Length: 174
Image (cartoon, rainbow, N blue to C red; front, top):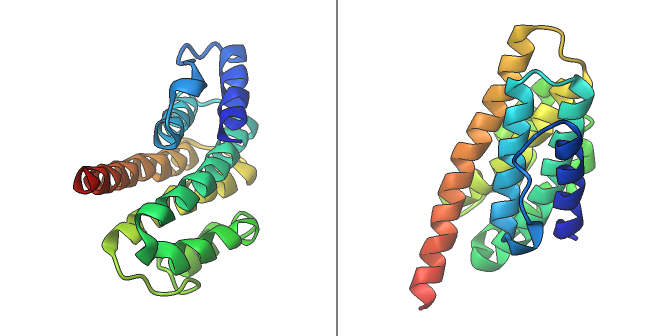
């Protein structure tokens, strides 16, 4: 499933002259997500259309759902929190930026979590969803591009924390 998602991204990227295409079957889910996040950041920074950014953001949201499902296996203490988030994706992507901020970034719409890494994992879905909403409303100024860019820069920072947590679990199991 995630392989097809990345392939779709690479098809679009090659049509847009993006030279970051790689062989998706050789990537882990985390690496696929990172690749798509970097592609999205590139699209934002090169001021591609709102439609392209919305499409790439939506793809990243889909990949985040796969990633979070796998993450729960490594951090079962995040199960309730991240499962609730995954179930709310359609709702989240239809909200305003303000509603996402108050309900899902701050977390009032989600159950409590026991490990800080759950918060970082949550943002792998919520920040791209926010970018999707930004792009869906149209990007008509430099400020709006900057807002979208900041969401994905934060996403990449949260991804680094999640990657470190996953690597730590893998090392502890050896």
